[in-house]
Image (cartoon, rainbow over the protein chains, first blue to last red):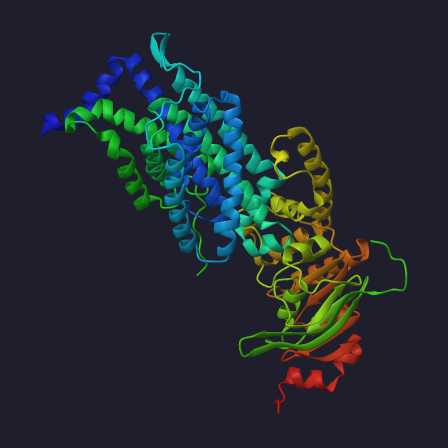
Amino acid sequence: MLSLLHAVFVAPFLDMAGSPTFLAEVLIGGIAAGLMYSLVALGFVLIFKASGVFNFAQGVMVLFAALTLVGLIEKGLPVAVALLATVAVMVALAFGIERVVLRPLVNQPPIILFMATIGLNFFLEGFGEMIWGANVKKLDVGIPDESFKMAGILLNKLELTAAGTAAVLVAVLAVFFQRTRIGRALRAVADDHEAALSIGIPLKTIWVVVWSVAGLVAIVAGIMWGAKSGVQFSLSLIALKALPVLILGGFESVPGAIVGGLIIGVGEKLGEVYWGPLVGGAIENWFAYVLALAFLLIRPQGLFGEKIIERV
Amino acid sequence: MSDAGPPLPLLEVDGISVRFGAVQALERVSLEIVRGEIAAIIGPNGAGKTTLLNVISGFYHPYEGAIRFAGVDRTHLKPYDVATLGIARTFQNVALFKGMSVLDNIMTGRLLKMHGSFLLEALYWGPARRQELEHREFVEHIIDFLEIQAIRKTPAGRLPYGLQKRVELARALAAQPTLLLLDEPMAGMNVEEKEDMCRFILGVNDEFGTTIALIEHDMSVVMDISGHVVALDYGRKIADGTPDQVRSDQAVIDAYLGVAHA
């Protein structure tokens, strides 16, 4: 019994203290992975904030963006041109979704819109594979997936670039939401549809903007994940990893998506490396969900979610 | 908008009818609101006052009749288009953006006055910021005017009811409307808050020259601030005139005292 307690509560920390450079590598790996989760979660938060819709298709949007980019590059387009074309495709997709899916369903209960996004999910999955094929593709963005040493710590160029990009994107989005006219309109629509209409906020435009932004975030997430592990169907499954991030951070909070992603990224790496051997590994696969469950019990609105206040 | 030509009524409601299933909410109601006046719409509960306001602001559409604003027909416009014409409103049950600060709520009301391409704004940070500051100035003026400086950073949802009503008025004013529609601006307020609200409504009319149409239950308030009263009962107009005329109208007295409708 005592040895078990020792193995769980003492030994892992002794390991950490014993090799600080290794600990730093694990932490950096965790932060890098966490920022990637944040990126996917951000796409969810943006749409949820502005329209109260939980977009089940966000993961597939990441896959679709990456597939389009790779497909265009394979057709022989220069990377920059292919990237611009992908942006155009995602914006066109946003217009299409507003026109075909959202507009006919305006004022329907959230569950109906949620079901519609499940439909969208299957459509995009099939459509993407029909056009670009189902093979695993390699995405080369010109950043070598190689490692170097700094201050004795092993670092990966690709992971660092991805983390940096994610950080910049997140900062820009935070300013956009808090400080600009459109950002304020987005928050207003999320808060109260009727009041937003009465002061002349065009709902349709807002939806197109927000789905376009979510599409752009999907492109960035698609590039980062695709460059790391290839563009393949499993890319759409990272949406499942974003779910616990959202529960941790709160569905309506941009900072929440970031902090939530970091906690999960770092937590699962630490768990895997230091506690994994105790249970035969694979902690990384379920850590996020267990943490999310615990959060649902203690703080269902998430770390940064708006507190649920009800008048009685 | 120019004032050339004969003084047209700012808003003409011409024989509009609205029905919800079997309920006839409005039946051939006509009224005119003249530029610069404060008009009051009164009537017992269920008389159709809020429905009338919702028709004017484009949330409902009448199945017969027409609405003209500044001489132009706008019967079938949507709320967004009505707002762009210069009609702002408040709601009976306060529809503020509860999670946003008072300042942000009011800035949102300024939205239609702010320009720039929707997508490009996110990229051009410089001009966007300059525009933001210009509009902030106007909004600060409204905040001073309505005496809500102390609560500008407070989330709107945390304010007491009376103040929420005042913030909603501020948000409507931020759009610099030609016509301001107020749905029971003094409901649920104590005497002191009501007096403040009366002062603000008169002040808005005076300082900004805004034409105001308001729904109110409190007859003494109505008599104090408006020069034109329209009374509704069971979806029909039963009186229209100066406060004194309407107050002494037999149909109005009956409606308020609850004489049985044959």
